[in-house]
Length: 396
View 1 (tube, one colour):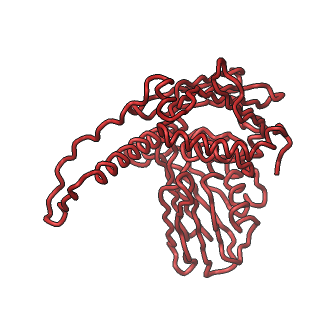
View 2 (tube, helix red, strand yellow):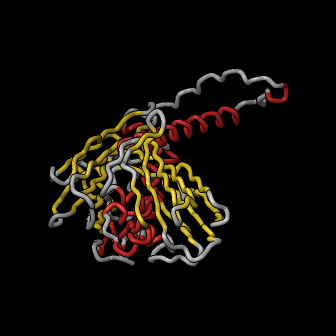
View 3 (spheres, one colour):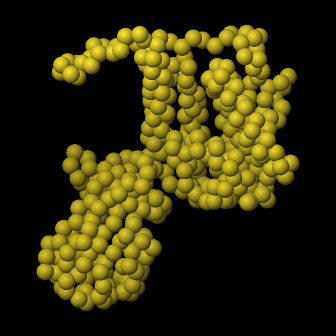
C-alpha cells in the first residue's frame, strides 16, 4: 500500500479511525440521525492558477442542505496535485480530530487503494466531474447521443455492428465493425463535416476533404492528427494503405475525445453531429454519422446539484411516507383496480426540530455537541505552491 506521504502515526490508527467513525455515525443515527453543513470557505491563494466562480451552501428544506462549488482552472492541464485533508473538532477552539492526511491526488485517483480516502471519494464521485484520474484539462462534458452507419454500396462492404453503449452516467463508447467485401482497399477519400444544432443542423467548422492514404503516410495536418491519435489507440486503422482486413473500432470512449478535442476546438453548449463520407475510387461507399452533445462545466455542476437536491428530497419524502403507512391502522385502497386516479395526498408532516441547546442533546442521548470542521489544502504546479484552501464546517 502507498504510504509515502501519510503520517505513520495516523496510518497506525487507521483501524481505530474506522472504528470510531462507525461509532460516531451510529451515535448520530440513534440520536438525531442528521448531519448539517454550517459554513463553507473557499480561498484561492494563487489567482493565476484557479478562481472560484461558485462556492456556497444552500438549504433545500429545514433538514437538508447542499454544496455548490465551481473552480475555474486558469492553467491547464493540471497534474502533480498534492492535498492535505484534515478533520478538526471545536472544543474551546478547533483541534485535530482523528484524521490528518497528505496524499498525492493523481496517484490516488489512479489506484484508489486507500480505504480511508475511498470513503470520501465515493461520497462526491457521482455528484462531481472530479471522477477521473489526472490530468484535469477539460472545460465541459462530451457524450454520444446517436450513431448512424450506412453502407451506400452493399457490394463493397457491410456493417457487422454499429452501436453506442453506456458505461456509467458520465461516459459512453461506440463500437463499429466494417467487413470489406472487396479487398484490398486503396485510393480512399474521406469528407468530414461538424455541424451544430441551432434550429436545424448548421455548419460549425469548415468541411474537410482529404486523401486518407496520403495523409496516413505524411500526417502533416494538425487537425486530422487529432482524429488519427484517437484511431491509433482505439482501432486497427493505425497503418497506411492498403487495408486487407476487417475495420474495427471496438471501444471509442467519450473521455478520450473529451480530453483530446478540448485542446484544439472550443465547443459551446449544444448538440453536434460529425458527418463522415468515405469514397473508394471516387465512388461513395460508406457513411458514418456520429451525434454528440457538449455541456459546459457550470451546467454539469448545476445538474449535479439538482440531482443531489432531488435525491435528498426524495429520500426524505420516502421515509416520511413509509413511516405514515406503517403507523396507519387502515391499509390503503387500491385505486388502480377501478381505473381511478388516487386522491391527492396531503403534504408530509415536518420533522420534529432537534433540541435547541447542547444540554438538551446531552440529556436525550448523551451525545457530545461539538462542531466539526474539515480543512482541505490543495497544492499544485508550479513549484508545488499552495493553490487553494477549502474549509467545510458541520454540526451534528
